[in-house]
Image 1 (tube, rainbow, N blue to C red):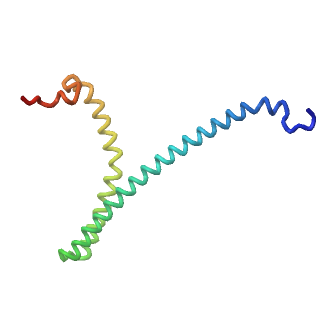
Image 2: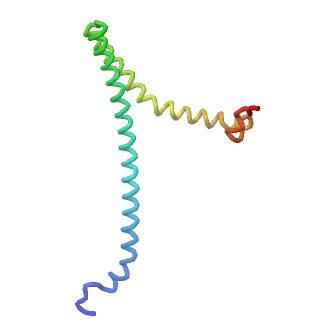
Image 3: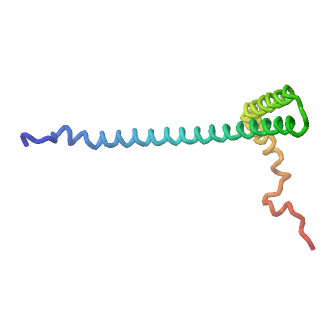
Length: 126
């Protein structure tokens, strides 16, 4: 077949090339999924920070307008709320991990004392 665009070598290599392309596409899809999960977690953390900041700001404004607080007191309240919110956000992964470790350590020894089904924990009326 002279003049043909498809050569025998190309036809032989095509399945391998398509397989490689499929693997690359799967790896790319996995990376996009990880990115999406990371962005979702970041969005949740941002929302948590926003709530903390806005609550502190609301309390400061209430103090200024309703309680007659001085501006310096209100600004101190905002700064304290921001610091508390940031600290809580920073500590959440640490406390979550420690809680998991404790649950894994305490769970197995306590398992014989726990009911095998949740309904067994409830007293039967009569």
